[in-house]
Image (cartoon, rainbow, N blue to C red; front, side, top):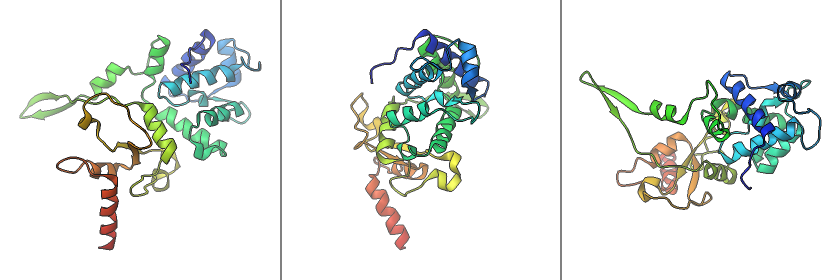
Length: 253
């Protein structure tokens, strides 16, 4: 997909949706959006649905959830068919392609839990009160601890990760742990569907430089417990097959 360049009307839509997110309001009806933007609610190809759909495509390119899930029909409080066609066209959560309510629920949960909406604001060249900035999050992530009464700041080095690679890995393997079979939704409830770690079989820290990653061969979805065990090897990282063997041996014993 070529880079989406949002038009002025589409930017207006994005700004309104970000303002709603900042206020913890996660739905807006098509008619209300039409009044606020001046974009017709019914005009094939240039109506509200089409405009917010383009905003969602840009969100997808930025590694963000599909923000247009917030725009709903007045009578049903559901997204229009256009949203579900967009999800299927982008191959988002293909396991729910025939279940509209589940697709909307998962996408809405992703919007609510996302803490990186500043990426879209920066892309638009605007600031939204209540949307944290990247630099603010970095400051929040600085770890601090007290040692004998003196406050010491501890910083760490992190390797940049491409969110699109994570998505490609999950599209390939799904959101169950590929080692132990853990499924967050079955254990904790449907609101946690899709919660999973993605493990680099060869750790980024071992490569220590920018390099190409194949999401089908270099990445694997794993639960937090298996992820911890993978990185518990004294002289490196265990292979997924080694952890699978550990589980089999433990069950036998």
